[in-house]
Image (tube, rainbow, N blue to C red; front, side, top):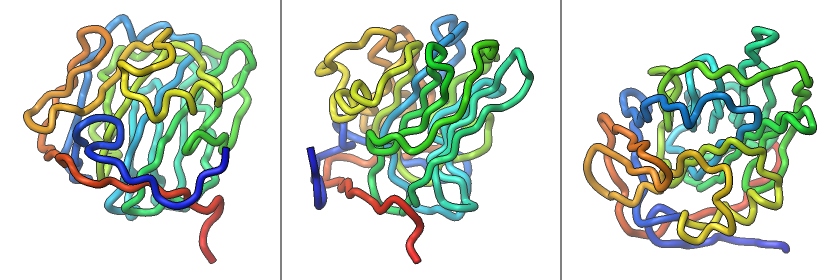
Length: 239
């Protein structure tokens, strides 16, 4: 399948609205729960659009456990980091595509313990991978899950339209099958432990479609129904 040009969709791309995060104080936090601990495999993914690439913008993270970053300000690319509790070190995989402002992207980070790999995907395409040895283990830190940030830092400057976390390693095919779906339309929700759709459009909380994992929002705004554009981007920095 080959796609070209813009996809124009109403609302928050997947759903009715998107959370507008100011890049300095907006937080969207989910209290830690046993559903998020003891992962052998991990997938975290969702949609974002940046207003600025002049700072680090985290997409989803848990302190001392994992961090999926929408943009690293040096290089303007995505990044996925996972803390190995056995080796007491971070395993990092860097994206390869230049991330631009005012464009919607789907981002996914995957830990695949069966194949001993860590992957990062952008718009359903594998960007890069790193080794995850068979003696490694994902650190379940017991900290809150942060959407659009990490441990009161890495504040995302832009919008989040959907976010989810899974205790399975989704394949490229599975990621592509789910990326344009809302929760009700998923081909399968096996392994999904949290799915935040940002349909509220107002208020200071975001409900999860799975479990009792409502996210608390502080200092955020909302983007209502309208046209949000997603455009394929080149695979390297512009010259």
